[in-house]
Length: 77
Image (cartoon, rainbow, N blue to C red):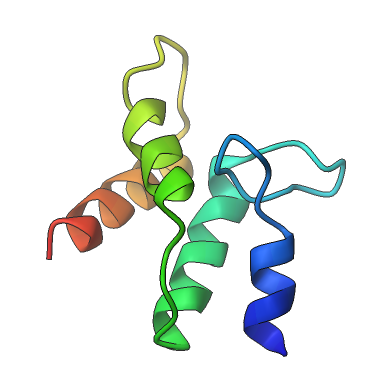
């Protein structure tokens, strides 16, 4: 039930929806961590979203930088 809800919050680009329904790294972090805690599969498109996010030439605040690095480390383990 919880995992179904989490999967329903993944946008077509792989990011998890924020309050406005847009893909957001912050929400994606919590979505990924929740799926991992539930021992559920991380959608391939979400992995691609995270990997591609680091390639975007834009400002990233410290919280999102830590979240991004955490997800990339977990992906490689």
